[in-house]
Amino acid sequence: MRKTSQRLADDREIIYYDSAAVGLRQAKDFRDIGSVTVSSELRRDPLLGMWVMYASHRQDRTYLPAERDCPLCPSTDDHLTEVPEHDYEVVVFENRFPALKAPPLETVRAETVRAEQAIGALVDCTGASLLAERPGAGRCEVVCYTADHNAAFHELTPSRIDLVLEALIDRTRELGAREDVEQVFCFENRGQEIGVTQPHPHGQIYAYPFITPVTERVLSTVAAYRQNCGRNLFDDVLDAERADGSRTVLATDHWTAFVPHAARWPYELHCYPNDRVPDLPALSGTARSELPEVLHDIFGRFAGLFDTPAPYIAGWHQAPARTGREDFALHLELFTLRRANDKLKFLAGSESGMGAFANDIVPEAAVARLRALAV
Image (cartoon, rainbow, N blue to C red):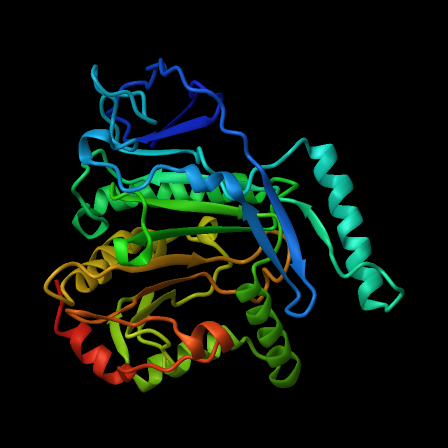
């Protein structure tokens, strides 16, 4: 793999990931674009104990452009885009309309300390303000899988998926080392039903300055299980699913993909390495080399669920950069909110208001459908 870092016209970083056979990337960005004024802040909900991101500039981001106006396609002589090169394999660049963008590090440090002191005082009941806030530090990146505007992840070759993984591994390692980042989340939203604003095949990376609420809850549950049972909860759940077998969709020497016993979504698949690791950079050996074929298989199954490709969210759940790494297990969660060809699962009152899910499709029925879609 060859990695080449360049700068766009507004000084955002763009990084090309290429096979060794590809030449150097040297095209310049000749667009006359001004910098987007980024206003990103975090406010803490004192009842739920979670940070909420605010980024009002994102109201002006590009929305469902025509193919001829796509900002993620390679540049042409007539249409200059976010990617100055006339072709590419995999490319990553800073989001022009990010939910998170770090101010100067000195500001981040001072404001983070102030927010932590306020939260600590709240816990100690010393009369601190309930209205804690801090800058929306961190970084948001776009990951383009291919120059082909009309492709999809399941249509990529295993070798291209391998290159995408190399990019995600590199970005996770680099972003996780930043002082203003606590957790790195690599994900893809696919389909207008999900809320995608750019149809070109791509994913995103959020480097958060906090540990996300889902991960915090999982870490708490895992810690309690360790204290009570002396074992790792991720390991025991995976062992239980593998031993039961009724919800397993794919099993290799090093990976297991299954519909979870308590799936919340109509079709939901979790994919774990059989030997626990905390994050993508920790993968090695045969587990790493098997992964492109595994992903090609499971994304292909999802593509065949309905008359048209299923809208989905796919996310790599990774350990925080500095907390809980000894017990957290890397895994992919892939799910669709479509429950039939012409029906969506909407997160209405119970789900959105109370976080209490009701599913129309039992996991064993979802497994039967996914097993039948072997590619």
